[in-house]
Length: 169
Image 1 (cartoon, rainbow, N blue to C red):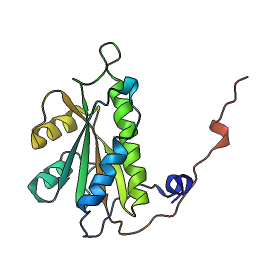
Image 2 (image 1 turned 90 degrees about the vertical axis):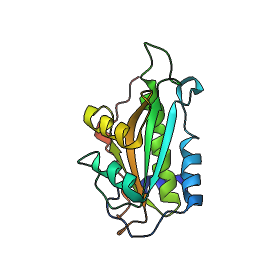
Image 3 (image 1 turned 180 degrees about the horizontal axis):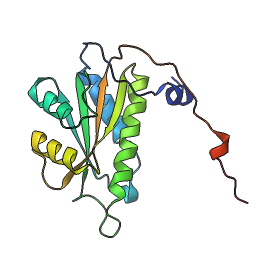
């Protein structure tokens, strides 16, 4: 699949078939995630892979906006011990966001569907995730990525809007 095709096919998928994602596919997704850029190459990310069982249910219930029937979630966290020092510590958010986008694009390439549900900066969601995954204080949940085989395949789309482009000379 060409990159442009993956970009246009990447859509938020919220309904999944009851088919597990293979360990090989999970490995591919994590390799893609860690291929993302990070400020000063600090790679301040941590990935919590949760499939099946009560922990998966707890992760899904951690946010009102994350209750989908996926067989896999990857919770992407920023590790503040690996992040840049103050006052630019918060670049971990951009770094982990790039990792999440890479997961979403690789999922499309593998024939999977995915949706990114935000966690940070929602304090309640972060606390819920820290509790159900027993995260150390230095791991701040940025997002929950649901992954699976899509029930339906949304049409590709291009959301280009020339009115939002400003050329400055």
